[in-house]
Image (cartoon, rainbow, N blue to C red; front, side, top):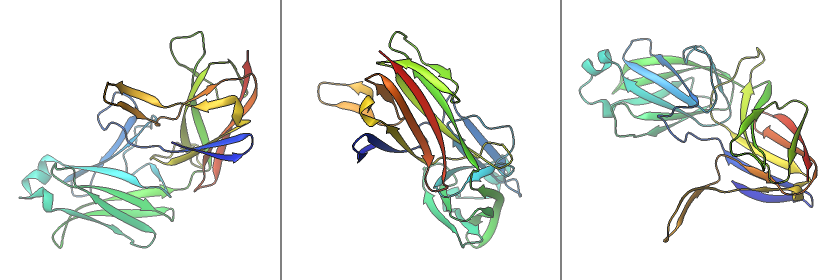
Length: 256
């Protein structure tokens, strides 16, 4: 998370909402099997998605989305060296693929789509089509925000509504999970880069998450984003998907 002074009383943080743990007890995995039944395609999110298959949901356009791939039992029988499988996308215009060799059967892939629409992700065995799946990419219509708060007198975080004024006190720690929402009201699936700004910025500070402390070094991460209120007043925190132009404003009233 980078901190940049934007105005005398405004701070901005930029953080990549990234896949932290593929095997996790939280978040959600949206999966589906290709048309030929040989490859399973999956996408992880930090928020819960309905039970639809990956080819039935809307995937967030404008950002790299990591698609994990795995052979089915049928696929394992139909290929000698799964590491030789490759991916391509159709149509090519407006889409970029980056292969990710995870060292386990089918290489994974990152796909970035700049133009919303339906794209076919094809898995190739040399020049032969091995499997394929249709993926629907969309720009969000709005942004929801899951807001977790730990007040200064509390030991644990509690989830609060992002609507209306949120009452907190000095020393309260807040973290947020932005969720893109489509025009149909359903959650759009995928990772994205959230821009978070606070006004006035001198009433809050960004924290670094310490994952381990040792004599030789500190192991820490700026993700997930976390801020602490240090002075009383009214603070507005704006969470924005800058690429797709949607945002959500959170209002906090900080007491002494």
